[in-house]
Length: 243
Image: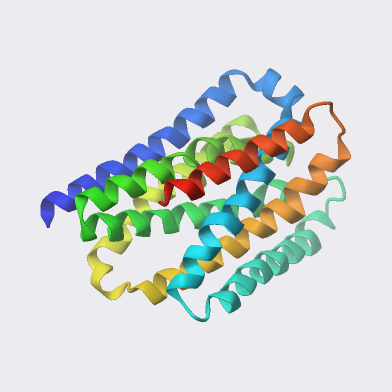
C-alpha cells in the first residue's frame, strides 16, 4: 500500500510538472502568445467543452444516478460566482476584467484538484490502472496551464501574479488533491467521485461556453476555427484513451 502511495504521488507530481512546463513555455514567448491569444482561447474552448461532454460527463453519469443534478449545480455555482464578482468587483472598477481570469481559474483549479482524487483511486485499484489513467490525463494538463496563465494576463493580472495563480490552480492542485484524498480513499466510493466529476464538468462547461467562446468570437482571425477544431481533437484523444 505504501509503495502505491508513492507511485500515485509521483504520477500526480508529473502531471503538475507538465502543467508547469506549459506555463513556463508560454511565459518565455509571452509577446507571441499575446498576439495569438485568440487561437489559444479557441483551442481552450474546444478542449474544455468537448472533453466535458465526451469524457467527464459520460463517466460521471455512469457512476452516479444524480450526476445530472451535480452537473447543473457546478454550472450554476460558477454562474452565481461570476455574477458576484461582476457585481462587487467589476462594477466598482468599470475597466476591470477580473472575472475573465479569476472565474476560469477557479473552474480549472477545482477540476485539477479532482484529478488528484482520480490518481489516488486508480493507483489503489492497481498500478496498471493508475498508469493507464495517468497516460490519458496528462494529455490535458499541458494546455490547462497555458489557458489559466493567458486568461489571468488578459484579465489585467501582472506577470508574477498570473504565474503564481496559474501554478497554484492548474499545477499544484493535482498533487494536493491526491495527498488530501489518499487517506480517505476507502470512503470515496464511485457515487461520490461521480458527483465530484459532474461538479467539475459543469464548471468547465461554464468556463468554455461563457468565458472562452464569447472572447474568441470578439476577435476574428483566419485560423480560429482550426484552433477550435484542434482543441476538440485533443478532447477526442482524451476520450478514446479511456482514462
